Image (cartoon, rainbow, N blue to C red; front, side):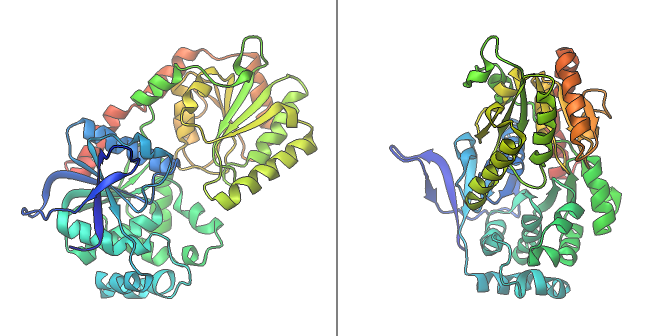
Length: 435
């Protein structure tokens, strides 16, 4: 049977974890229209959130859906509906995972050497590849959609090991070149050759923006015809419901100064340091406040990165006008009530928060980073674009936005173009090969 388990959403009384049942073998060559979505965990990151949203959209269209996960931990666990089947994979021994990867075929062997076979610390999800192969061989879903570079690679290996005829859809949520170049991780530096083979073997590749697609073509030597561009679905029933709820924060009371909002995990990509410098310049003219939602994924980095930003805020003299709220389940209420939303990123794949802010009627200032913001804002038609790392330009754009509030109706309309239903239907075509 293999070493994967299916966790159904029938929760036992008094238990927060689902009961576990064994997968029943499927008689047919492929489970007709069963769609599987592969994730590392149920953390609150953009990849997890987007994948779960798409899975929920397809389940709402009547497709049987498996959410295949390495870990069922994370804040999104409570958002998985009962009609989606959770399949929790078991981790194998690392040496077993390395050995099983060789069964993918001789053409993969040289590419596996450095990032998999000889890496001192290979991908954390590599241990789940044998269980994924067993799942594909046993259940044989019509399609498997994977997310993140390492899981895209491991899904390709698992499919070859399993011999299943499941369609493999690899999704790319950020520029591969940026992801590959900015990290000092040994396994990441040597994954390029393996990634090229894995992505080339996928039945379809989905990029969340045209910029991400162009980068994949150039960096992985992939033909443009192999890549579909599908923007992330952000306008969901949860967003519409959440944006109308009250904000549980004293800064949004009557007569309070305007609130500048930003959302993201502190780190190099989001470049909150530039945002803080820009906010200090704004405070010289307007008594605004800055609220940042989000926290680092790694618990060891969470407090350190927050402390670094607080230290910078103190140096700039803005510590009393800034608040780090961490992760919140409903950022949409904040977006609907903030005076302006700011994205200060050095790079993005798409920039979900920009589309979410527009859908909530919040004016936007964003860096013109690669890639996504210019596509979402249509080169400045629905928000202001400023150069990356330019605190002065960012401050000026924020002040202009605060002084001249935008008409909300065009923002609502533009945000509505990223609605779940039409995007879910595009995924149906890609997953089932009906394009």
